[in-house]
Length: 242
Image (cartoon, rainbow, N blue to C red; front, side, top):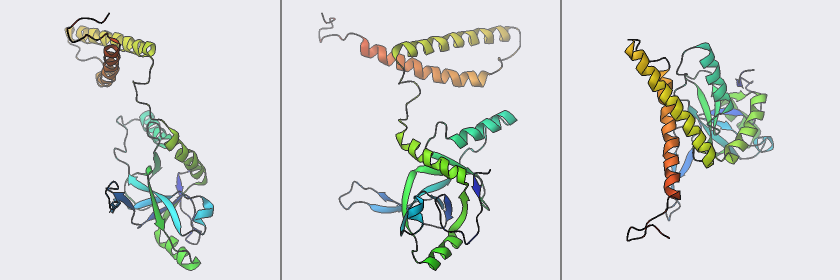
């Protein structure tokens, strides 16, 4: 099933509805004595996340902003890369607060709901006015299965601790990773030298290797930082403490 689906105009407002034409605001400079001022969001679309009993009759709903997804193509234009790229977007790997929606009816580009941008909106309460609002503003709705997924993703976006990629490891694990990376770097350099000697040009995978080595440098910097913390300090006279 696709992530989103079209629903009849007379279908009631529901959790997972994608709405257009609502102005979303956030408090700017909230640390000021006057409590800050309202700043209008650039988002032209939003996703209803309030629970069903609220959506059915309450005056205020909670929505999250929807943005156009940037860089919506994998770096390698092949079948495997395309499938992996889209599955990664769907599952929110590495970006738990980005909920991928894909394409929307009559909208250019691919879209994602931002689970870090919540807004309160007021909607009509009277039945006929509410339905007219829905008819005018609703673009589509999340498929039921993806609405269920939204529940877990909302939870996950707040409970995820967001570990960095290198600082969380214990010393032994960090040293092991660094040794492996340095060994791979040495082998790559030797192979590059060998191929250049035979006029064969750069070894295959040089761009990938460069990316890996950039990552290795971050691990090495973390190792240096830890060693500095463990090193004994000198007193003002330059002598080692006893």
